[in-house]
Structure formats: C-alpha cells, structure tokens
Image (cartoon, rainbow, N blue to C red):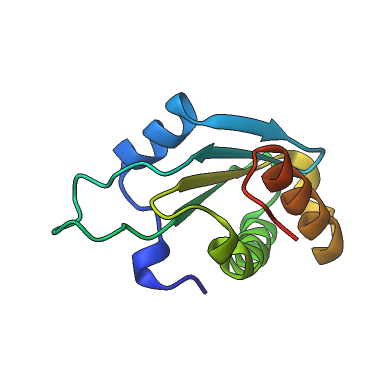
Length: 122
C-alpha cells in the first residue's frame, strides 16, 4: 500500500500529470510523469513528496481482476518512489493486457516506462 502522502487523489492532479506530463507506453501500461512540480496544496516550502495514482478501467477485466492489478501496481510503485524526483506526479494507466500479465511482466513494463521517462527505475 502507498503511504497517504504519496497518493494522487485530486482530479486536477491526475489531469495535470496526464495533460502536461511526459508519456511512455508499454504493452500492459502507460505511464504519465510530470516531474518536479510544486504542489500548490502543500503548506510551507518543503519539497513535496512524489505522488502516484492509478487508472484501471473495465477493459482490463472484472472487479476482481481490476483490484488485483491495482494492488500489484501500488506495490511496484511503492518500491520505485525514491528513484523519482521530489514533487513528481505519476499516473499509471493499465491497458487491457494488464489483467492477464503476471507480477514480473508488470514490473518489467513499469521499469521500462520509468527509465524511458528519465525517472531512473532499477
């Protein structure tokens, strides 16, 4: 599970990451990264934390499959948050193939997308 301060929740933040961020597509997912933005909602001048959000539509599968994909992606993203610049907004959108992919395939695709975006995954 992602810590509360690392969750992307507001619709405006999702829209900012998708519309103004860079995008990298893989066979099972698409990653949108808006790096190093300042958070207008954060008090003070401290560096805002990296936040991630997930979009898993019904095209991925039924409710059980969608929730399983979301859990896997959250777990994978939690391990990679430290490699991203502070204040980054990340949106991971699962494609229909993500429902059939195993944990290792999702990890490979997420790492490849983050490397392509310059986020520095493993």
